[in-house]
Length: 216
Image 1 (cartoon, one colour):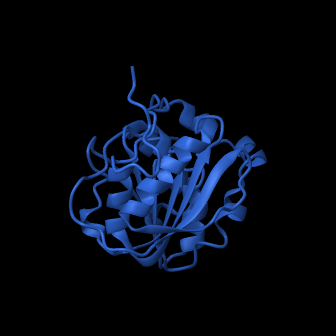
Image 2 (cartoon, rainbow, N blue to C red):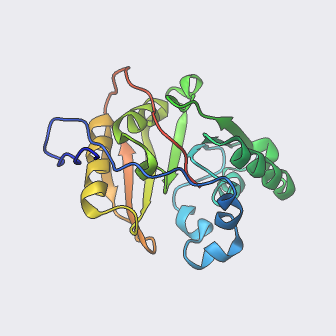
């Protein structure tokens, strides 16, 4: 039996209901152009990414968003794509090479307890977390690690599938983000998703690292 999810006003760390990690072979389907019927990377990201930015994408899968992020960041920018599944990253590297953006993509294998961002403290300009946080056993450590990597004023676009994440679970994620030092800017509309644009504002104490799986 799983533990209940605390309400946002409780003092216990916000948690989300864990889901099984997306199988690596589904990465091919999730990177398919057919997905653009529901989510259009260029439209979703245009307002958030500019040339020269350092972009973080946890759970990139095989790069449905990564390639567009790399194009937008330009030759002077970079995308740090972190996944826990080596085969997802292999597929991402192949697709990045074919798209001509391989040199802009830093594909990293995450550990079970860390995104491996120690070298990026205060460096990241923008983070895309699409359909990943709900797969984690706890949201709070994830948001703390992303916050430590983010510059003051950096933005985080949180996108969760409405079919998997209930309003109460999404509220718990937002509470964890607030406690990590993010504030809600607005709630953009993304089809079939629960979405929040967050901004890094507060100090974050050293402590827990990310713990949990990846997504597509």
